[in-house]
Length: 449
Image (cartoon, rainbow, N blue to C red):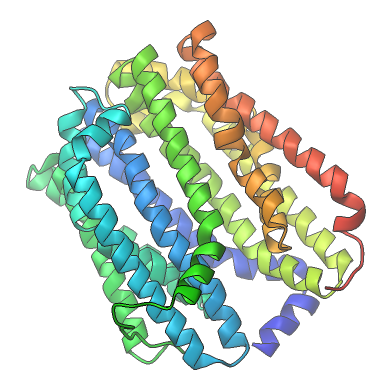
């Protein structure tokens, strides 16, 4: 651990950023890619309403994922500090509490969602045409939600030990199994939406088994143990408070998607929901490399900020911002050059391809700006400025996009919905620039904490 800390303060920043970003990028990219492939198989095997159902189901899945992320990220932070202080027994106790919280939350959320699934889906924009497909998909997904939550939460614990490669392998294994089984269940066994959901659950189960093997095989400094039915409230509070920003960020994305789906149904209909389901996956896969840069950048910035090495903080942030902007610019060029080709990969429906091509052009209008916004949020998170990090993280989906998407369609129709994304990106960029300029004298100044 000392050697790793020393590297963060002395090694060349480009090499450090590459070594820390690459495993995170590969794992997230593969996870995003399997979501894209999932949508392609459903579009080809089920049809446009199947893709629309994925878009409607997304907010419910995100809320459940947000719970797992809360306990995983919050608990991982506590564990890493306990391990750093050589308090391994306490770290194991925290580990047990994470496991307890994941099981408890999963059981409650799964039961609630199953009891109220139909009204929930209708509230999130499901029409009579979309509802049967969304029900088929989510009934299977919900039954395996505890496995999904375990895999997601425990993977954050693995990262807290510094095992970025194991965390990457977990995501890759789950995604590969899912991709292999998708065509078997959807086409071979003609299971439709239920087949796609079952492939996802089996993929996550494989990832969970891989993690169990890791923890039970003695490769981890932690061990799985059941804490009983009465957790320590002090530890529960500590885990949840640290993980709460992650929950709020993921929940805000869920709320944004639900609002967009609802407005699309009102102003466009089911096909527009399917188009957004496809575009949302293209957005996700476009920003995954940027998120990988942020994950690699944060430990470097955090260490050097704490050590008062302002020059290294500045250089790391600039390199991260330039790299993220280059990635966003590349995605912008590709998507604006061949939008019709990209839509054609997902669907054979002429209406989806034509309307989706136009929507892509408008949504990605100012995409090169998103790199700085995301990296700036990561910067403030790394230096412990939680309030500004939180504001930056919710600025695009909640502060800007939701109000715009609720107002503009009344004046511009469907065009207003798609332009809302570009306007929100531009406003989030301006907010990031404003905050950076305001803090520039203190943010990159030499100091100690």
